[in-house]
Amino acid sequence: MTRSGLVSILGRPNVGKSTLLNQIVGTKVSITASTPHTTRQAIRGVVTENGVQVIFIDTPGLHRAKTSLGGRLNETARAASDGVDVVVAMVEATSAIGPGDRLAISTMLQHARGEHAAIPLVLVNKMDKVAREKVAQQLLNVSDAVAEVATAMGQPQLIDVVEYFPVSARTGEGAAALLAYLQNLMPEGPYLFPEDEVSDVPEAMWIAELVREQLVRKTKQELPHSIHCRVTEFAWPHVTVEILVERDSQKGMVIGKGGQLLKDVGIAARRQLPEGCYLELRVSVEPGWQKRNDALDRFGY
Image (cartoon, rainbow, N blue to C red; front, side, top):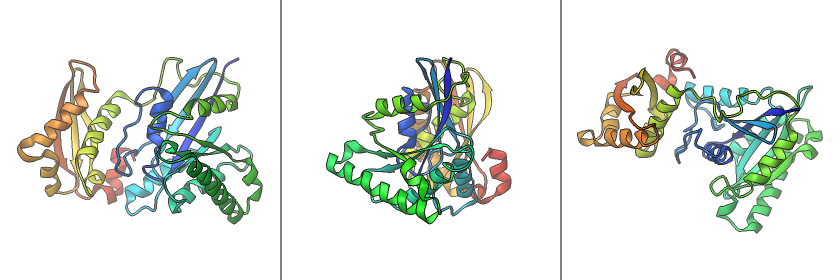
């Protein structure tokens, strides 16, 4: 009998959720960057081995939303944990437990109660960045935070249910032990994805995300948040990606002097695509799209 189940990964922006997903799956299934809110959709990565399939769900970072887009990203993260078998809250070993971490813990605990409760698990990431004593202290700190949040929710019985793991998403330290632990928690049942599948991201969406990843890495200040990418033409090997910004002034910033930035983005994205792909990039303006529900609906947020 095979076993399979779902594991959602929650956390504030930039805590390392996407990096961990890529590390465990063993290939890149979610884009990464140092800029907050790089992940905007619930991305699924699949690990199938030894008769067990674990479907990991990478989620947008939980935060105090300032735009309609931000609110929808929070909703996506919360909804991704509905009906899962394990819900994970990730914090950093390098930072104090802050409001964003407590929001992730609270969301985790909310999904760990009721008739179809998920198993709650806290990860302390970036253990490679600090001494082991600091990791141990942070495990105690986040345990205290879990106790405080559970008590405030009127759910003190959840305190002793939560398990804790230190990991390094960057180096992979602790990832094998984490995967083995999660595999043991998966319920009996058929595989939810084909055995050789590692992600559910459609090819067109993946190409658009690769372009956005490079733009996020190469632009600064508020611009990364104002960028949305979508494939407007897909007739392999020709692919056209439209890059949408919110203001005319941002259009020139994306293109760069003499078109150099846009050229660099295309080269970097193309390196991650099959040989022979012809990638065309176009830049357009969609005024104030982050705050417009009609635009967010069209873009699939």
